Amino acid sequence: RVQGAYQQLQASAMAAEQPDSAHGSAQQQAAANSKAPLRMSTVVRSVTKVVVLGTVLGVIGLAPVAAAAYAAWLHWPRLVLAAALAAETCFALYYFFVITKNLNALPDQHNPPADYEPQQLVASFLQHIARVDDLRGFLSQWFLDAPYDSIRHDNVKELVAFALFFKTPEQVQEQGLMPQLDALLAKLSAMHDLQLPPGYNPDLKFMSHLWGDTPHMYRPLFFYIAMEVIELLSCGILACCGFKRYSVLGCKYYTWGLPEPQPQQGAQQQQQQQQQ
Image (cartoon, rainbow, N blue to C red; front, side, top):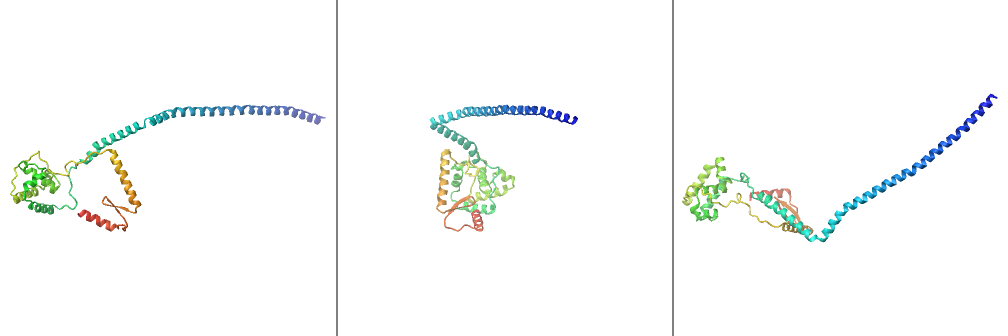
């Protein structure tokens, strides 16, 4: 009897638990079903906001670009002219303040070439002066056709120091070469009985391509652009015709149907050009 009663109690307890578990699972399923639509609607609203905001910002950002493009389409000749004037102005400033300064820049001291031999140069100079019939007229030409009476002894010394020593008289004095320069001027005066008044005339200038300003002329930017285009076209045409381009000491040249120069030949050509 006791065992039968215990089994009846267990059966009743299990029957009581089953409705509670079924009720709990039903509540969980209902909650999940109720949350799913809320999450999906939130994602849709967020995506919609991002798309609308991006579209508005895109329209706001493209509006100035579209307005500028429309204005450029209406006034493109003026814009092209303004751009050309601005480019030409920038190029002119660069030319006069940078290029001109570099062209006229002078080093503190000119170094003679590697094959410079003062003895040989002085001998050649004296031989050349010996063949000059009118030394006074010769000196006047060197001093830009100045009257001979205005030329002084130190002016000729300055000219000879430049022509033979690549230096000013002050630099010649600093390097201890002034006795050689004075002896050369004495020989020059004895050869032609040249009597130069002492002193120095600061108003006289002689032809000095190393010390004077480099002659140049301003040309518009379009000229240089046209020259570059012509050079590119010329190089392209020569290349299409079978010409080959080489360079020696910075000088470029083209050949057609000739063998390529060997390194030894190129070195010999460089030595010959340096000797010349």
